Image: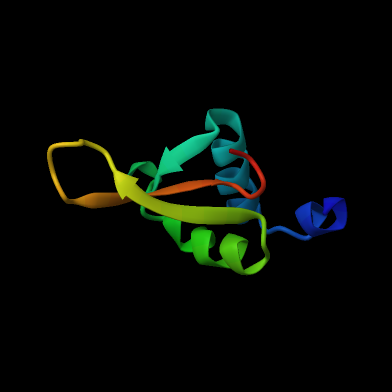
Length: 71
């Protein structure tokens, strides 16, 4: 996994570090110029996306990104 982290581009590394610092980030909170790195991080197996409700009173779900393997 460490070799995978070294091969990340600058933007991918910034997004990965942001997710690592916060633990879990709503996709809408990631700046739009950096959000393009999310699919490549998912394809590399470093992060995972989860859809869940923010509010229990609504049926709308939002996407959250977190480091793979953390609960």
